[in-house]
Image 1: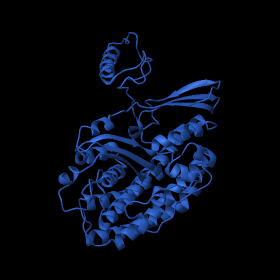
Image 2 (image 1 turned 180 degrees about the horizontal axis):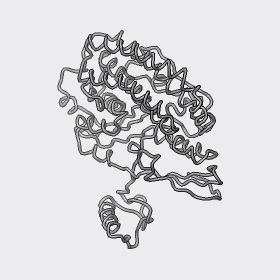
Image 3 (image 1 turned 180 degrees about the vertical axis):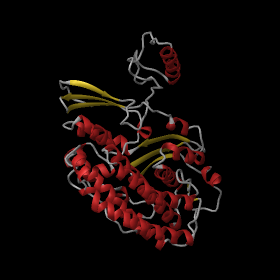
Image 4 (image 1 turned 30 degrees about the vertical axis):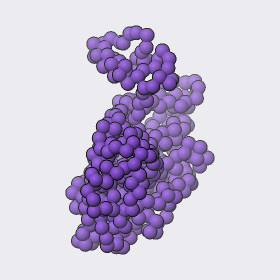
Length: 419
């Protein structure tokens, strides 16, 4: 991902104090200025897409929810929306309103967690403590409504598992008033605070043209002037019945990304108020049949579903073969779309800016890591592996590494790589 540039190379990762998850950057520097950057991923591959193929559609809801603790509702929503399209199910309006409300609470949870992390990365720990204190308002609401602060398990195929009581609705509305006061404070103080401006203004800039070329997603793209939001562009759940704006900034720097996220929190509060106040009566599920009976009717076919996760556009591809387990599930997470912008944003930045530039996209590395395996010989050659050969090679590689040696033979990875 990097161009050929001369200078001193500095490794950052895969284990580094500034990285919350393992990634590997090689920075080329001239003095304190970064002149080039290279990125290697897949240090945290968990095999989720492979595991999905051995479980039923219903079981996969709970597996996919664990891809990310911050975007758990986004993953299950995108998955069940795709399965519902395969089944041609019409989800009741009340269930769609509940999904929307939980989704926006999760967006606030994610953005406020990021705001705290960003404050910590720039040495502004007061902002970190304030943001995470106020985030508790949202986590308490999620726990009251779903029973869990993380992994809410409220989605099911055809609707939702739990209702929203009148008492909970009133609590939501009251807490949104309380949270709005805090967000007004952040909107007024954070973009104007000296430490924030010094560390974020004109740092890690991604132009509108570059964001469009690299298909930047979510707040990263919107901070560079791209008004792209699946909730508006391809509405799902109850978004076509609610009034909200797509938040954009034009500067494309870290300050713009910070401002976009704070303004999006304010917009989410408005959406939550509308959903809680105007939630219609009706059923929670599309069919009185048990979910297991519905899943037995899934026809052969494939579908693509899209969801505006807190980090950006989340895409699920699902292929069904007529059984109760999927034939293929592929997940394109927003972090994968935004990694190229990090590499570009690092160029021209100072070495000390690396942690906040990387954190600027709110990366989820566990979501991102993938491994490709050739299984049919269509790309044959002396360096090709089938699945069983790769498994055996991986075990041999780690055994040799533990003994301080290296794997020998006709086919081998570079010593710094992982199978």
